[in-house]
Image (cartoon, rainbow, N blue to C red; front, side):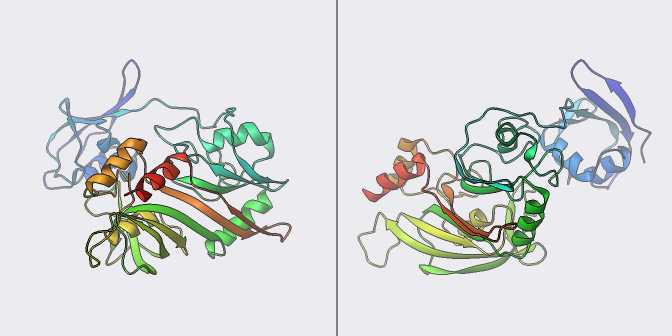
Length: 333
């Protein structure tokens, strides 16, 4: 099926090579057999990045059938496994010996990942907290108990002690956390309040996206309330152009609110992944004027029982400037 992989070197990257002759077999499966040191998931990511070549030509579809040829996998340069402290300003809402609560700015990833090794919340926390972050999250994610998407703003908690990390993880696992988000959406979900209860998992059509599934995936539950609508139509039976929606999470699935709002026909404004379709022209103009290039989503409320002291804690913050400006413009429609 395949020759043994050969390791060669290029100027700035490592290259693995193997000859494959496996007609009819999915390419990612054939590659996994040819390169046993790489997982199938890792190979799929490398395919998406254009790092796999057949006879010198880039290929990107792992679901395609393998064709005979010499395959090369260009490995990205190895980066340091240990994040480094960076003096990045943080908005600290609460801090004691066991945990820290911050209001995360949009554009900051929670922890280092391929393509985003610096400028993350972990880097900032390492500088702010020194050696006092919990090590349970691993070398790359010390103190991280939960995540917000890079471009989602709002309240996050991180653990400074192992006992806080274990306690917070237990609270998140049992969903004993109050979490409410503010979203600005295209149109408005109907009815004006309700519960969305679905299965969410990887999209069968695009592995980089999540989707509502009929089978498989994991249960996802979101309660929502339309707080305000914008751009009321001339006819009473028509739909508004946009809305401000409060979403309360009862589970914490990847991209849960973004997927659930899109499933209701009201994707988040500015969402580059799930915002299919185009808003009404006045809404598009408002988004452009603000320069919003991210999903309009803010983690506004986080409430929980302190896992060490037993104190009831609740934090609430206003959306950042871009969302506030956009809401003000929408209010004029």
